[in-house]
Length: 148
Image 1 (cartoon, rainbow, N blue to C red):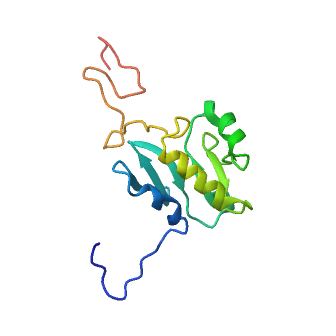
Image 2 (image 1 turned 180 degrees about the horizontal axis):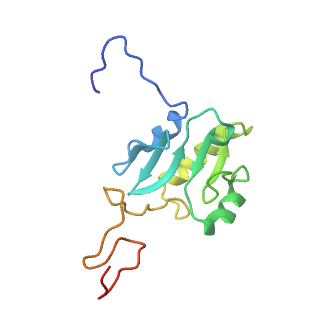
């Protein structure tokens, strides 16, 4: 545990109890994302726990591909495509069975259900597209053999 200055408050995510069962997994990583917390297993983004006042972001996102939506929604009828990120499924915190459904989803994530998890595209650290030597800037047509 790291030292925390006396009198300094620590803000705890309201849904931290959901990812706690995954913390013992050696491949588990928790990273900040869009102001919330993203849970990774084996390098795959499995679950996203937003934080914010907007009802569209109160709950848990299940990170998956469109091809798994039907199967997951059949197993968990409380899930629906997220209103902002429709590629992911969303379990609203206001759902009457939020706690029990969320715990079951975390459980199948821990068992590596093949329907869960996405691998992000590698990003260039500079945030720019890679330039190919001898070519113009990405998205521009290079002039070949012509004077400007």
